[in-house]
Every structure is written in structure tokens, then in C-alpha cells.
Image 1 (tube, rainbow over the protein chains, first blue to last red):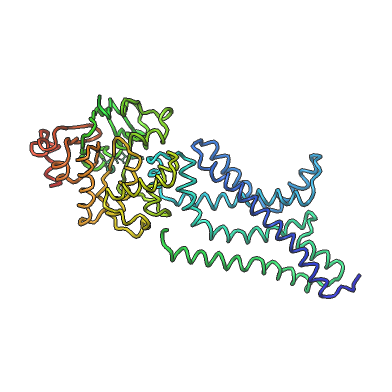
Image 2: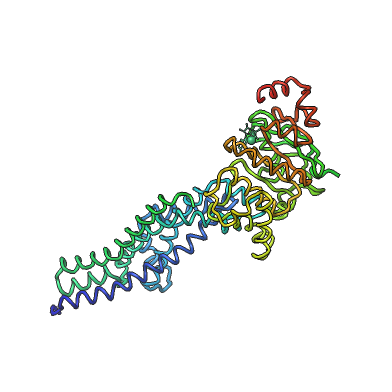
Length: 218
Length: 242
Ligand SMILES: Nc1ncnc2c1ncn2[C@@H]1O[C@H](COP(=O)(O)OP(=O)(O)O)[C@@H](O)[C@H]1O
Ligand SMILES: [Mg+2]
């Protein structure tokens, strides 16, 4: 049991890190798609649609991600639906990510001057065409830095998926610790793993932010 | 038949009644200057003409078709009415050429090559052919405004609405924009302008409409009206701006 070499530990953690990366990518891609749809819906002319989206965002921002994971896993299981930890973690993280991204992106859309909407409108563009060709491309530019910054939160958020038994980096660290009783070494490596994933993204977000401020309005 | 016909137009923002019954007919090829104090409803009238504001009651007809949000899509309306704004509102993420080409391609489904050819022609018309590949931020205010005019013209609207389009410009750049308008007028374009350029209204315009407190207080032939204003309000306004 205890004849784990340091390399065994590192190797297992590296293998588990693949799942952290995969879960992060899926959460981010799925959350991005849902978030984009929500961003468009939040600009709907119908007030009740806007309110519904706002409520969705409040709900996911106002409750801990851990509870969302529990609900997705144990809650859905209690309804008699067989759900794997992988599916539950994916669903919870996608919804969580979509709410935050929608909020970030909505703010970016709101930052585009109303004159841009009006200019597009008098040129004959309807709402969706205006969004697609005029507003979103400009909003995207200012959204990149905060979006990349938020991706760090998603990566760290995947650690919570360990509590429902999904064997990503944190969970694997816990299991290795149970086998080897070397908590300091193991969790130092786990932390290092997250750091190696997150730090470059943080740096990149900061770089993008700076470049945006220098580049001016285009 | 008038190109633009406005009948008993009313518009309120909350309980602030901004347009209190506007009647106005404009013929094709006319150049109409709308003047009046700030807050008298000039912009609101213009914005009702292209549905940027919805009106509460009354009728607006353009080219014989009633404006009505349910029947007039932005695309359909853009065939009749173009608009240029005080702040240019060019799309900063697109080059000058792309600004002009966007609507013809996206709204009319024109091919890129045709749209580019048309854009070059319209830019030439406003004296900016060489700026096709420039970015809006590289242009002076006067140049940006002329691009905005070219962008509107690329859709061949029957009427061009201009809301104080020289007000945000440095004085030395105003002339360039006014010259473009004058040329459009001489080509027979129907223009409805909210303007403070009294010289332009008198020399290029056919008609002046003086708005006061949400109503058309006085209107008539440009030269006559500006040299012999009938109402004390217009007399006062003219002496204030001259
Ligand atoms: N979107 C709006 N919401 C509320 N009030 C408005 C709005 N637009 C204009 N107004 C009001 O309508 C009145 C007329 O404005 P406007 O048509 O812009 O006048 P002008 O162009 O002659 O200066 C003003 O009192 C202004 O405050
Ligand atoms: Mg105005």
C-alpha cells in the first residue's frame, strides 16, 4: 500500500489533471454557448424574458457551487434518474459558468453606446443582425479579458466536483493521501497543478486588459 | 402626392407631451430645415419619421405607405428613410469601406464585390474615396460624418434625415459636410434637416419649419421666413442665433 514513489504520486496526479482540464473545457465551452444564448435573451424586447434570465443568474450567483453540484447529483438521483458523477458535474458546472458569463457579457453589451444600435437600426438591421454584426463584435473585444479571467474560477470550481466522487485532480489527491498518508506532499502537488493551469490564464487576462487599454477604441 | 405626410402627430414621454399635433407635408426633392429651441421636439419629430420613436397617435406616411411598427420592418423602412446622427455613430470595428458595405450586404443580400463597388462610388461622392481602407478613428469628425452620409446613401433612401449633423464638428470642418449636403440637394435628394446653420437653411433649403413647444409655430419659404419672421417667437429665435 505504502510503496508509492514520488513519481507514482506525480504520475497519478498528472493523469487526474486531464479530467480537471476536460471538465473545465466542457464547462467553459458549454457554459459559453448557454451564456451566449442567455445574453441574447436578456436583450429581448419582452420584459418577462429579461426577468427570467435575470432570475436564473441570481439563482446561480446567489447559491454556492457546492450546493448546485449536490442538487445536480443527489437531487436528480433522488428523482429516480440514474446520473453519473461525470454528468452531474458537467451539468452543474455548465449552468454555473453560463450564469456568470452571461452576466459578464451582458455588461459588455450594455457598454456599447446606444448610438450603435440606432445607427444599425436606421440602416435596416433588425435586432439579431445588429447584435451579430455591430454590437457583439464590439462587446467581444471588451469581454475577452474578464472572460479569460473568469475561466480561472471555472478551473478552481471543478475541484468541488470531487465531493460527488468525480476523480479529477483534487479527488485523486485525496485518494492518494488515503493510501500514502503524505498529505503535505500530495496537496502541495495538487495545488501546484491548479496553479500551473490558472496562473498563465491570469497573466494572459492581465495582458489582454492592458493591451485593450492601450489600443483605445477599435 | 407628398413623399412625407405627417398628420396630427402626437408623442409623449411619460406625461411630458413633446409633440402636440404636427401636420407636415414634404415633396420629393425638397430641402426642409427644422429649426427651433432646444427641447422643442425637433429630434423627436425626426426620430418618429424613422420609427426610432414610436408615436402615440396621428399618421405618418412615407411614399404613400403608413408607418407602423407591425408592417414596416427596419429593412423595409431603410428603403425609404436614411438618417445621419450628430455623433456620426460609425461602427468603430469596421473600416470605412466596411461601414458603407454592411447594410447592403446584410440587409439587401448584395454580393461583396457589388457592395464594394457601390461603397467606393458613395465615398467618392462625399470626397473620401481614398479612405476606403481607413479606420473611423483615423478620420477627422468632418470626414467621419461624410462617411456616415455615404453609408446612408448606399441604401438609396428616398429621404435623408439629418439631426444636427454639424453640431459636433470643429467650426472649420462644418463647411465640408455642408458642401456634401448642398451637392445632394442639387442632385434632387429629399433632405429633412434639424440644423442651426441658418445660412445653409436660407441658401440651400427650400423651406424652413420653426418648431416651438411641440408644435410647428411657423413655416414657409426659407428666404422669406428667415428675413421676415411673422411671429414674435421666431423673431426672437432668429435674433438669438444670428
Ligand atoms: N427618450 C426620451 N425619454 C424621455 N424624454 C425625452 C426623450 N427624448 C426626448 N425627450 C424630451 O423631449 C423633449 C424634446 O426633446 P427633443 O425632441 O430632443 O428636442 P430638440 O431636438 O428640439 O432639442 C425634451 O423635453 C426632452 O427632454
Ligand atoms: Mg435635438
